[in-house]
Image 1 (cartoon, rainbow, N blue to C red):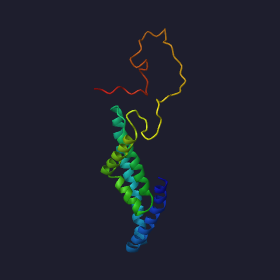
Image 2: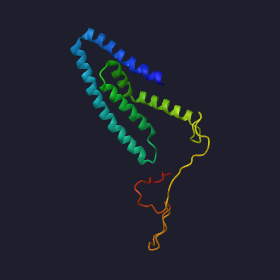
Image 3: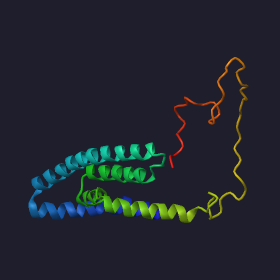
Length: 172
C-alpha cells in the first residue's frame, strides 16, 4: 500500500506536467489555463448539484429505516471527484469526470462492498487474524427505578416514547 501511495504521489504530478506541456504546445498556454479554470468551476457546480440530490436520497433512505450505505459511498466518490476537479491538471480532471458518472460510482460501490464482505465473516469478525473471542463492551450504567407517581404504563420501547434518537421499527 505504501508503494502505491508513493507511486501515485510521484507519478500523477509527472503525468500532469507531461500532459500540460503537450496540451500547451498544441493549443497555447492561455487556452490551457482557461480550460483548467473552467473544469474547476464545472467541478464545483457538478458537486453542488449532485451533492444536493445525494443528500435527498440519503434522507429518504434513512426515513425508510435503512442504512444509506450506497449514498455514503456515492458521497465519498463525489467528494473525491470535486477535489480532483479543483486540482489543476487534465489527468485529475479526467478522473474527476469519471467519478461524476453514476454508473462508475455504482461499480466502485459494488467493488468496495464486495471487498468488505469478503474480509468479514457472518459474525462480524475479520477473517484474516482479527479477534477470535466474543466482543466485550465495558460500560458504566445506572438503573433508573420506575416512577411510582406516574400512572402511565411503559411503552414497548422501554418508556422512551419521545426519544428523538430512536428510529421507528420498519413497517412491514
